[in-house]
Image (tube, helix red, strand yellow):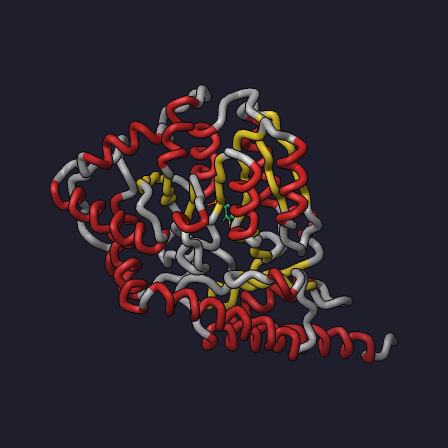
Amino acid sequence: MNLRIPGPTMLPPQVREALSSQMINHRGPQFAAMQAEIVQDLKHFFQTQNDILIFTCSGTGGMESAVVNMISPGDVVLAISVGAFGDRFADLAKIYGAEVIHQNFRWGTSADPEAVRAVLREHKQIKAVLVQHNETSTAVTNPLQEIARVVHEESNALLIVDAISSLGAIDLPVDEWGVDVAVAGAQKSWMIPPGLVMISVSPRGWEAQAQARTPRYYFDYKKARSAMAKGETPFTPAVSLYFALQAALNLMKQEGMRNVFARHIRVAAYTRARLKDLGYQLFADEACASETVTALYNPPGLDYKKWRKLVREQYDTIIAGGQATLVDTVSRVGHLGWVTEVEIDACLDAMVAAQRQLASESANRVSVPAN
Ligand SMILES: *Cc1c(COP(=O)(O)O)cnc(C)c1O
C-alpha cells in the first residue's frame, strides 16, 4: 500500500514492531524512563528548552488544549487563517468565548506579515495570536519566522502555533522564534499512528496559563506538568503510542534532524516538479508551497471521484481529497514522515495511469456505434 495522504502516514517496520509490545504499568518506572527519554528527544526536534507536554488525543484536542489554557472568555484574539485549519482554530477560540478577529488570506497564499502588523497596531488589546505553521488543507506554509517577529515587535501577545503538519518535518526553532505554545500531532511527521499530541509551553505561556479563566479539566497544562515531573501523566495515556514514538524518534535521530528537514524539502520539490511535468496544475503559490503536502487541481473534464477510486483499487495508492470549499477542486499528495522519492514516483505513476485509463474508457464509449 502507498498511503499518500497528509496524515495518518505510513509506519516504518521498527514502529510497527514497537506497537506490538506487551503492556506495562503506566505508573511504573519503565513508563517514567520512556517518557523522560521521549521528552528529551522532542525538545531536540522542537529546538526548545520549554516544557513539553504530551496528551492522548487527536490534533484538534491539542489545539483545544491551547485555547482553554491560554485564553479567557472576552479576550481579544487574532486568528490568522489561510485555510480550513485556520478557520478551525478561530472557531475553537470563539466557542470558548474569545472575541476573535478573524484575519483571512486567500486560500493558496500565505499570511502576509505586514498585514498582520497592521491589525496588531490597530488592536492593541490582542492577547494571543493563533496561526498554522503549515496549512494542510491548502498545502501552504506560512512565513512563521516573519509572523513571529511582527507579533513580538508590535505586541505582548502570546504566539500560539498549530504546527501539527510541520513540526518534525519542517524547521521550526521554537525558542529562537519565540513560539509560546507549539502543537505537534503524532500521525503527521512523526511516523506513528494518530492519538498523541506533543506541546511545548514557554515561561510566558505558563504565566498566561495561571491567569486564564476558561474551565478545563482533562487538558489542564498545570496538572499535566506536575504528573510528568513524577514520570506519569494525569490520566491513562496511549502507552502503545509511546512505544511507537520512542522507536520513531530513534529513527529520526539516526537520520539526523537537519537531514530529516532536508529530505522533506527535497521530496516536496521533487513532487511539485514531477506533477508539473506531468501537466498537473498546482493549487498553492509556488513561493509558499508546503514541504509536507502538495495540492493539485483535479484535471479538468475528469471525474475525480472515479479517478481516486481507480488509483486506490487498481494501484493500492491513496491520495487525499480537498477540504471545505476545495472539496471538488483539488486532490492532495502527502509527503511527510516515512517517505522518499520512491513512494512519490509510485504514487504519481498510479495517478497518471488511472487518468489515462479513464480517458481511454470514455473515448471507447464515445466511439462505440450507437445502434
Ligand atoms: C491534521 C491537522 C489538524 C487536526 O488533526 P486531527 O488529528 O484530525 O484532529 C490540525 N491542524 C493541522 C494543520 C493539521 O494538519
